[in-house]
Length: 312
Image: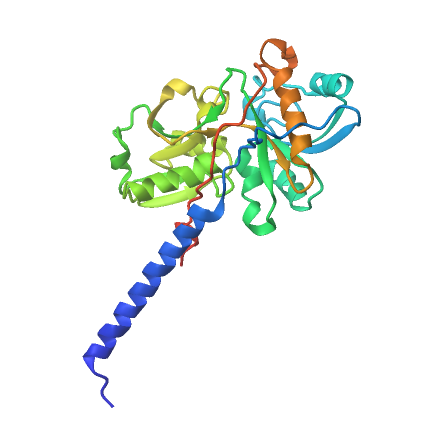
């Protein structure tokens, strides 16, 4: 039996609509997946008192911490928390127990087990687990870097002698980004490419800035995406200097490092107690071992992860 041509056309239209709806649903899901991540207590909330010891256990993977930093910024990574822990227990009766992880994936694996009350880390490392495990995370404070920066960006870089001078020129070129466990090196850059309708010829992914910088330096790719601090630290010191690269694009800002609590384990009054204590021992009162002015109120941030790569 001969099937009418109009039937084939109808099938094509239905398939196209289904695909379009699927893409839209996935993107809507990303838009609605996360709420505001900063802990903002209500005006009537009172912190718990120091009459009883508040014990909080946190996993730590932090760029400038002596016990967790990668070797590529070892010259800057001298931050220690021992003094902060002593002040918290003696002055505020807060027993802050820290477990350090050199590798990000090891900390993430530990967070999956719900073994901790939270973490000190790049926020996305914790928040990327929310959809699967439904953790009730809130950021009670952000931690400043040694230059007192609260923010982090992903940077599109090229070799200094590259003919590429704008983002549009990434069209048809080769690009290396971070992996999906990196917000500033993967999700934000991929969202920019999509929104700007920029289509690289090929996109590869690497775990570390050192790998991406090396690929760019060796001419294996035309453009690389790195964390902004990688060019001012020592990621490429063994084979290049920051002056050998140019930045052609920058993502939006996100918090660099946060103190994150699981609010299903820590009450709001206890979270407020920790937040107040961290802020009080920062600024002019901060121990030198934190390498900066310490902790500040958490900046507003609602993750909007890039999802198109998950749509088939």
